[in-house]
Amino acid sequence: MNTRRRKALGVLGLAAATAIAVTGVLAVGGGAATTADDTIRACRHPNGGWVRIIGATDSCRTREQAISWSAAPAGGGVTKLSDLEGIACTTDAGGAGKVQLDSAGDDTVLFRCVAGGSGPPPSSTKLVLNEVDYDQVGADGDGFVEIKNTGTTAIALTGIALVFVDGTDSEEYKRTALTGTLEAGGYLVVPSDPQNGAPDGLAIVDGSGALIDALSYEGAITSAKIGTQTYSLVEGTMLPATVADSNTAAGSLVRNPDGRDTGNAAADWAFTTTLTKGAANVLTAAH
Image (tube, rainbow, N blue to C red; front, side):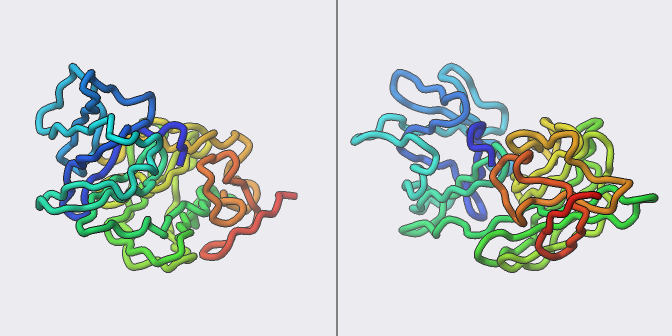
């Protein structure tokens, strides 16, 4: 995730989410607007619970729910997003809960109000796009996208989807629903022939539409329209034009080393002439 550009967005709740009522300073993006009474105001979208910070004189849109945070707690405030982990909140059912934070992809943070005296530990699973073969020697027809679980526990894939984005209009042109369970350290290969225009992109999204991981190749897609949301598919610095799949040498784009995700595409991805479908990536150069 590009932590320098996180927006004040979140998905609230576990099954049915609630507006989080927390005490603390939400210091993200360009800075949240506060009023003289030290209140941060926001609007929660009814579909998925997305939250946007608004100014003191702004109003929520139709169907949005107004929520707010106190920005001046006794004994000091929080100074970064991770400080919100474990803060008390109220669930949709009216019960007590604790805030759980998860990184869901570029520019996105998930806020969950978990019922009970204390929230569960942070998620130990992380899905990443790990290898992509979108261009083959001669006629295309044997492409694939590989996803890896870089976490330490298995993850259920129900509700998660692989989305293909056309760089011409930034619209998704294909969506593949994932199924089953991916064990820790495991690989999932999705047979497909991603477009090889300039640019095109891929994304993994969860059931709420939140971005889990993304890749924009052969150029930058910064306003991809996925479902009802708009995302940048560029993590950190976009891939240089020289880092691309080839139709003259067999190979693929891979995370190097295998599974690495620093939030900077230019540092994480490389072209290799060794295809490793369903296995750890190996970097070899074209002769």
